[in-house]
Amino acid sequence: SIIVVFFASGIRWVLGCVRIVKIAFLFGATFAYDAYLVAFAIPEMVAGLLVGVIAVTFIPIFCEYLSKEGEVKAWDFASNLINIIFVVGLSLTILMIGIAPFIVRIVAPGFNDKTFQLAVQLITIIFPLVLIISLAELITRILHTYQRFVLPILSTVFEVIVVIICLLFLSEKYGIFSLAFGLLLGAVVRLLIQLPLLWEKFKYYRLSLNVRLPGIRRVNLIAGPLISCMLF
Image 1 (cartoon, rainbow, N blue to C red):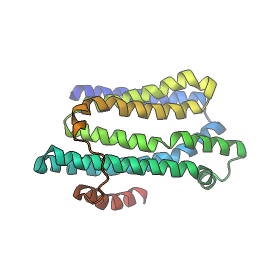
Image 2 (spheres, rainbow, N blue to C red):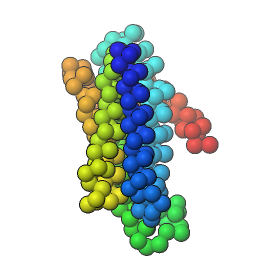
Image 3 (cartoon, rainbow, N blue to C red):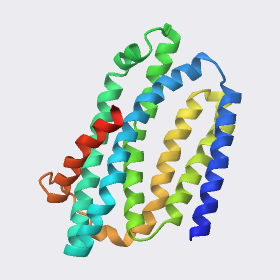
């Protein structure tokens, strides 16, 4: 599996370069790409913060639950964290889509009306990435806990492939929107590809939002300083 992970990482890097070259070829230094950069900046930052918190906190706490209290308690923690991330991600998405014009005015005050409107439209498409990528990252960390490494890295390869396919076949008709669609669809594919490996574990999943759970409190305790460090 180590060899597969190594080669998959290499393939993903190569495909990432292909994606960058294709984007540069299709859009270059255009107003549409300027609008995309602004529209992508805020979702990328927010997703990065959530993913950072998940990456640092989840595995140690989940493993501690597994070793000391068993799989049911561990999944009680995981279920609550999944549900909290879903609620937070969905709330942020709805909020940011609602105030998208205000965000664009602050981030890019020099945009003309055409570029401004395009940036606002792109934000409404791209911002759901925050929710999808955060859930995908959490699923990846759960799989890592169960020593499953191949499918998570392969899911990121397919994520990039989906973006490239959208650019190849949709860019002529939809322009810069093909990139936004590709990013969103690629993230969905990444999430869905990983789910079958956890199918047998979902019997432990609970639809609960217990923010007072000790494990959730520990995540919150770490998240504050961690986000502050990442921002400043």
